Image 1: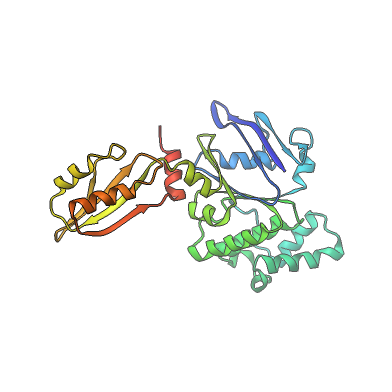
Image 2: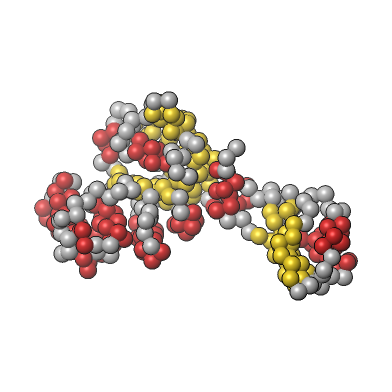
Amino acid sequence: MIRIENLTKHYGNVCAVDGISFEIRKGEILGLLGPNGAGKSTTLRILTGYIPPTAGNITVKDLDIHHQALEIKEMIGYLPEAAPIYPDMLVYDYLLFVADLRNLRRERKTGRIKELAGLCGLNEVMHKPIHELSKGYKQRVGLAHAMMSDPEILVLDEPTSGLDPNQIVEIRDIIREIGREKTVILSTHILSEAEATCDRVVIIHKGRIAADGTTDTLKESTGREYTVHISLQEEDFESIRKAFADLPEIDAPVLTDSHNGTLDFSLTCRTGKDLRPALYDIIRREGWNLLEFHRQTQTLESIFRQLTKEG
C-alpha cells in the first residue's frame, strides 16, 4: 500500500534520514522505533506531506508524494506528538469544528462524532473544556481529530509519550481496535508498546534502517548469541571456570552473586545452537547440586540496544 524508496532528508549539513526504503502493507500496524534523533518524526512528516524530502520518493496506492501530495493527504489521519487541540473549547465543540474543517456533510457530522466518542472513550467528557482533561484524554481527543474523516491510513507520532501506565494501556487498546480496519503507522521509543501493539517493527538508527520485521523474526535473526544463568550449591568458582573451559563456543563464566555456599554465574554462548544439554552434562559429571538453570530470552529491548548502540 505504501512504498518508501531511498528516502533522504537533509537539514543543512545534517542528514536526518539517509536513503531508507521499506513497504507498509494494507491493514498493518507498523511501529517505527529508534532513539531520539534517529529520524522517526522526520520520516512521518515527509509521509504526511508536512515537509518535502531532499531525495527519494513515497508512493501511496500508486500516488506520488511529489506530484499528488494533496490526494495522499486526504487518505491520511495524522496525530503529531503534541496534539494540535484548542484547550478552551469543549470537546464536542472542538470535534464539531474539526468535522467542519474536514467538510463532512451536515447529516454525517453528529453520527461521526458519536462514533469517535465511543471508539476513543470520550463519552464522559464530551461537554468538558479540553484544558480540564488529563493528558490521556487529550490524546484521545487528538486521536478522534485524526480519525474524523475516516482515513485509510493513521499516522501517530509518539502517541503514548508522557502518559502514565494506565493511560498507555488505554491508548494501546484504542490503537489496536483502530488497526482492525486501518493501516496504522506509529513511532515510539517505548519498546514494550511496540511489542504489544505492532504487527511489525522497523528500527531506525542515525537515519538508516537497522532492522525490519516482526518481533519474533528479529529475535531469531539476532539470536546468534545468548546467555544462560546457572545457580549451584558450590563454593569453588575456579573449579567451575575450569569445567566449562572445554566448550569453545562459550565465554568464561561470569560470577554474578555468591552467598551461603551458593554461586550464581552466567555463560555467554556465541552460537545459535542450544548448548544447554552440553552445559547440563558438565554439571552432572561434576556432581554439583543444581539450584537454577535458565536461558535468558531475547527481548525487543535487548535487540534494540544491540542495533542502536554507538559503534
